[in-house]
Length: 88
Image 1 (tube, helix red, strand yellow):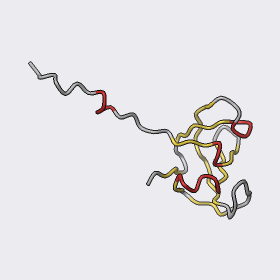
Image 2 (cartoon, rainbow, N blue to C red; image 1 turned 180 degrees about the horizontal axis):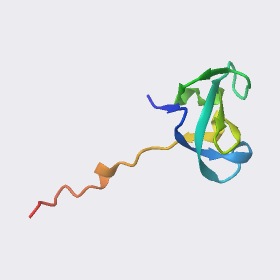
Image 3 (cartoon, helix red, strand yellow; image 1 turned 180 degrees about the vertical axis):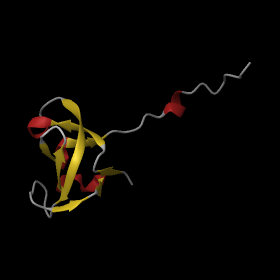
Image 4 (cartoon, rainbow, N blue to C red; image 1 turned 30 degrees about the vertical axis):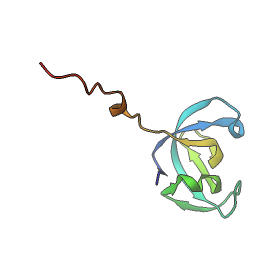
C-alpha cells in the first residue's frame, strides 16, 4: 500500500484544492480523528487511504488538508522500453 512520508515531495493544490497543482515537500503530518479536523497526532508516515483524516505542513510555509495532497507516482519506464531492440 502506498504511503506519504515526512520529507517527501508531493503534489499540493492550494486554496482548499481549487488552485493549480504545485510541488511541495511535507514537513509534518498530523493524523486526526475526523476528516477536515485539526490538531491530530504527529506521525512520520501515513497510508494514502488515510489522507482525508490528515493535515500536512509543507516546507513552502503552507498547510493543507489531505484532500489537497496527492502522491507523486513514479513513471513506469519499463512500459516505454523498446523490448524488440537487440544490441549490436
